[in-house]
Length: 108
Image (cartoon, rainbow, N blue to C red; front, side):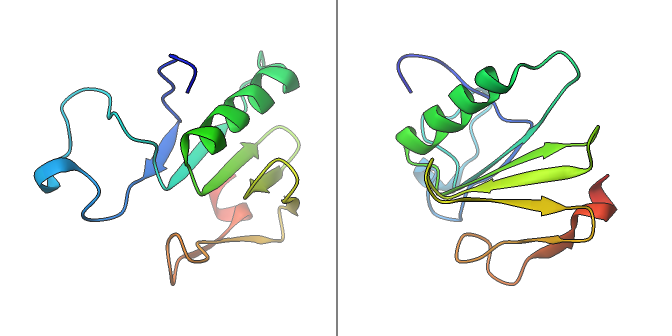
């Protein structure tokens, strides 16, 4: 991740990916399987896109960006494989979190 230490607002790492199956006390040295960013009022769109890009380049398989102010979210598999969710739509864990689903409205 270009030497940056990024910490998403929420993340998921599959079982067996941490050395000795122990969650580190500090920052992990691996990219999460899922990274979730919640857009704050002061965040600039370019800053969020830079974070998404760095997560994906580091190996994160799925990135969710939630913007509560406009009740929308973006789901990224890559910078070219992205789709938007409205409040009536729901997140799907896909192959990263099989069986997980949650309506965006429940998060907002």
